[in-house]
Amino acid sequence: MDWLIAIFLGALQGATEFLPISSSAHLRIAGIFLPGAEDPGATFTAITQIGTELAVVIFFWKDITRIIGKWFQQFSGKADRQDPDVKMGWLVIIGTIPIVLAGVLFQDLIRDQLRSLWITATVLIVFGLVLGAADLLGRRIKTLETTTYRDGLLIGVAQVLALIPGVSRSGATVTMGRALGYQRPAAAKYAFFLAVPAVFGAGIYETIQALREPTSVGLGMGPTILATVVAFVVGIAVIKWLMAWISRRSFLPFVVYRIVLGTLLLVALAAGWIDAL
Image (cartoon, rainbow, N blue to C red; front, side):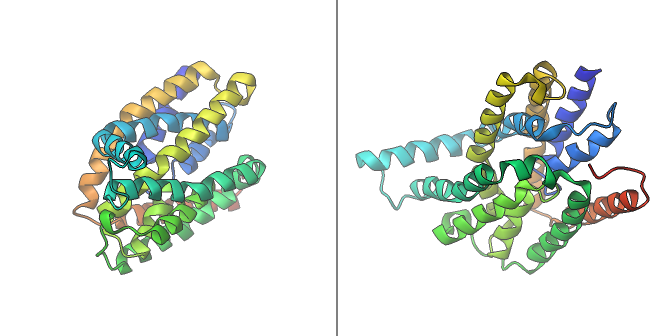
């Protein structure tokens, strides 16, 4: 049974990680319907996200390897410090600092209190409305090449909110990008780049912890690894679809989905059909 659950949760992770609807919220909600009604947990979520971020690396392989190469070449004088790829390397580093600090300082809070379904339902709705407003009112003129260090840091600060199930990493960073006036594809692409070091770092850390304490992963390491592989495969397909979608359409369907899901969750909690923890 654990292996079937792992396949389901891995597919769910891959399908929701890049959409602004919060993969951690969906995994948290899915836990209600699993045998024993167990929350998959922050450790399981962090490890399976390695699969989805590997999908990002594969999909944007040329961009990522070029950025890394140029960033290192600046120190040998082979690349100009004003080169857009060198700048993007620094932007990703600067934007990653806030979530690293928050992850270290508030680890216990992230693992326990913030996983209440009351919080998940509320932020699904609230940040859905914020995303809708930012997407509608954004000036839509800035491109990835014009990203400033100030904007990169602000988007990085927004990424910190993704530690709360229901916010969504892509949702928070894209919302900030749109609010700052970036085009949808530019905001999404920077969000993808920014997530790579943070997610890989968290995933590797949680994997090491899980190897030391196997009981911290509810499904066990075998099923969790399977879920990570499934998340990778599904994630690649979703990235391709999403980049095509936002080049022509708005985020409105995701906003509506977040509000409906959050509302249904609040009703279920208020009626006592499900437990918050």
